[in-house]
Length: 97
Image 1: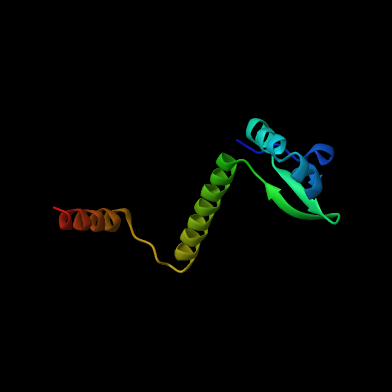
Image 2: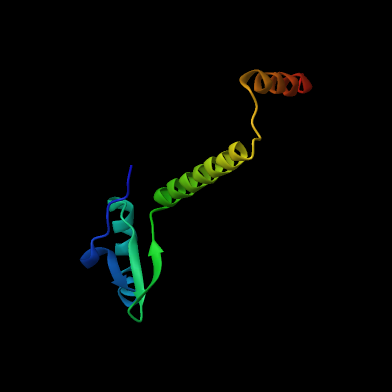
């Protein structure tokens, strides 16, 4: 599920507005699942994101890091055949018995 694109008029707000209407902003984030960019002195300062969306982004980053590490290992020749992998798994399982 992709996050909706920012609506510049709605999703970019000054910190002063957030201070005045914090509960409303949080309710909007929860229901619309859209991030809000807070500005301070006319420059972006923070992004408010729904907790479930934040967790999804973190999981996606971890998966991408795992894929990059796998690609590095493949490029370095650190790979196992299917049979070698099965054998290692069997050996590790035997240790737990």
